[in-house]
Image (cartoon, rainbow, N blue to C red):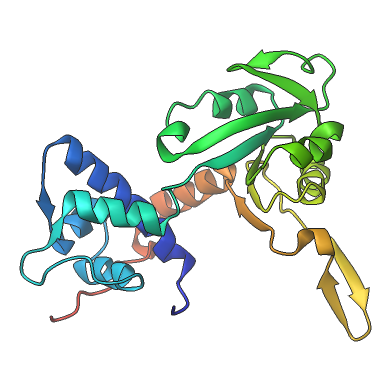
Length: 232
């Protein structure tokens, strides 16, 4: 498979959301032009993004909405259950735990962890909050695919390390700070420590988004323009 830009994966998620909306409206067919208009990109970009993963439509006839939706669900890995723990069960962590859409995509919360003694033992959405020190033991008996970090910035690095030590391979970081994987100095180069091998970190930085938005409101002419559509 060719190298796939990160932005293309983000657009696939957008296309899937559009297809779900179309399905709710009983729309059975769509086109790259229609998807492009709804997603704010070009038809060429839609076709290019989908082409990374195969051929899903018929030239001149477009796409069957349920079929394309099913294929994007498969491509994105949303046709299986993903077990998730939340580290940090303050207001943000509880809001994430109570977000209603996660289960629609097979994301299943299986554990909540914190270090605040006032929260340990309390329950959120039927799950008991456990101390972060027990996370590694927890993952010995319960499969955990992802960990969501909803902790203060000064605690994010240690919390992320706890997830890596517990062999959790996906970290969604809501703290406005950069997570630094632990490294080891070896002769002639620096390498990732064993527990960080294969760990993927995604950052969700609300403040960064607000700052970008402020800049582009003041400088709308600097916002990236869509790629011109191909002549085909």
